[in-house]
Amino acid sequence: MIRINLLPHKTVRKKKTPGMGALVAILLCVCAAAVANWMYYSEKQDFIKKQKRTIAAQNTEINNLKSAIGEVESFQAKKKKIEEQLKTLSDLEKGRSGPVKMLDALATSVPKNVWFTSFSEKDGHIDLKAEAVSNEDVSSFMKMLKASVWTPVGIGRALPDQTENGPVRIELLPSGERREFDSGSVSHFFDNITLGSTSSASGGTVSFSISFTVNNIG
Image 1 (cartoon, rainbow, N blue to C red):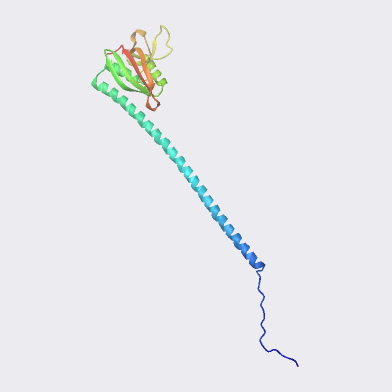
Image 2 (image 1 turned 120 degrees about the vertical axis):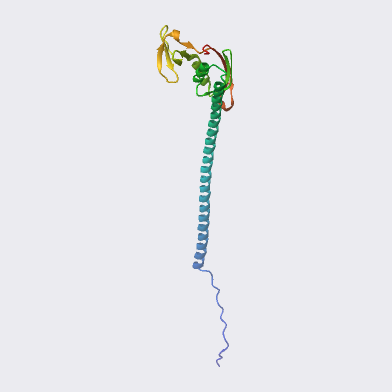
């Protein structure tokens, strides 16, 4: 006799294992994360480089401003000293503490890079202290004092390379006209020009003292 089993039959389902699609998806996720991280890192590096360039440019600008400020301060210091020099000469002229011709001759003998710090005159003898930008300016001041002369038509400066026993060639001041005069009609303003002590002053200038006598004190 044939037996038929009518009870439901239980089937066992096989477990599915990950296939190639899942593995590819995982690899794509890993690659996407790596690309995202690289892009983030690259962006940050570009930002850092840009910030460094900005900082370098700002530092250059700051250094330029510091240099400009230093030049302005140096200019202000020189301006102040020149104003002091002009004030000294102005006070001398107002107070008539020295002969007019002598003061005019002295004013025309001062180079632009020399300024007085003190001045005294007694019986035709002058002692002064001054500052100059360089030793060459001190030498130029002394040469201009030696070349300062009085002519029949006013103050002048004896030109170099004079011929012996010939007429004296003079540059008249302030016009700059050049003329020749008989040696007997020309007299030097200053004699016995003696350079005293010299030393370095603040700001790189030269501090010095000088004395001389005045021939023409009229």
